[in-house]
Length: 553
Image (cartoon, rainbow, N blue to C red; front, side, top):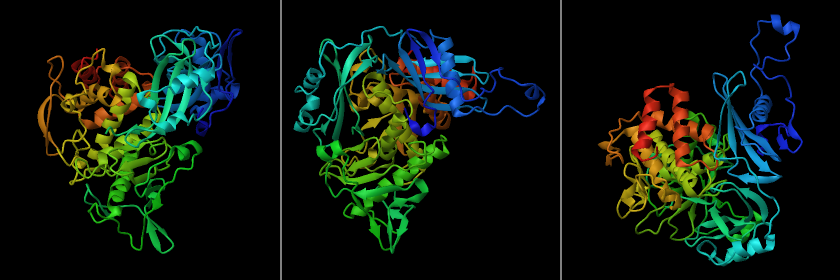
């Protein structure tokens, strides 16, 4: 449970063998029509806006009185983790589910209620009530051995000696059939030097490895910057020198890793270095040359600020975490490291190999990686299968929108991902207008999409978003030719980036849950378009048409 929301600890709904028990609300719920006194009947004062605790409490009551909508069964509990209230009083409460005291992966849900507390719907991926034993046939020690058995994901010797904690029992409801599973958390290092924080799920009855989920999310691939020219920077005067500490954006700091990498030991014990601070006697950083170590830091610092401002000014979110705190950035990670990653708390950028790729500090990569943090703190889309593709696409979408938002003439907005540091071809890792151009990311959905690496399965959602925003056909955007066809031969007229990005953000924060599939993303974005622009609107119709154009029906 996220304690920063200020939700009362008693806000838990229990569906048990003795019936339904709902923790009482802390005070009367506005619009409930109950608890009115004689004096309240004559007052002209407008009803008070319900508190976070009240909104959460009435969502729990709604689940108690609509057990079918909750996919309810005995011995389940629901705990609110986040609430949101629209201007018209409609509320959206995100909750986590446990079954017989065990966390349910893919069991999270969002309860939608009108201002009068009537239930408008429930967003979730769980298809049916849970009914399974909570007693494992496989011991935790054997589950650990199965998780660490030689495999591509565990080839690092660090994984073999670095079990982070004892395995825990969970209900894995992300697959077609919910199963009792052991969750084994390990840490190590991936083949290219990227840190690894791996969750392996082992069937608690058969010992089969169900899935492995990597929680380190990678790109896949006044200062003078490498890619964005001369840019304004927010720096802090400390004593007689300036540091790259951005007080205007939650005190985000940019530091130099001095070409070192995180060790597994530091990951296990939380002692990883944050790098060395950049200091200057004046308030000028970088030269525009990669030979100057400050230059890449300028790009990262600027990218972090632009991403913070984009979320705050365009989407109304107070920074990556939603609480105004800035996301730190580390540059010059490792040697010849062709990647960048988000580890749940900070950004880290490699320098590239100096031949095919330069430092991965471009605007769209900064926006991409930090958007993993937004996803993690909202829908928390699981990083595998179709939900993993939607997770990656979300980062491509918002990373691209950050690039457009910055409106920097040295790096104009386009739908190419990472083109600035692609020294060999200048096209980057991916293209949203034509994902299959990379040879692996499909333009069109199929039953095999869920089996692809998440950086490739994202192609379907990327293609959808491009069609939604820009439409089909050929055009030049940001000085680059874009050409997009549809999978069903239709012609799409885009609704523009502003509407498209707001629809995707609302769907992410209001309708998507951890296990959302492509079909459910279609439903969620249609609902988001209806919320924002009205039933029967052009925007709603175009969302449906754009999904059909990528074979998601």
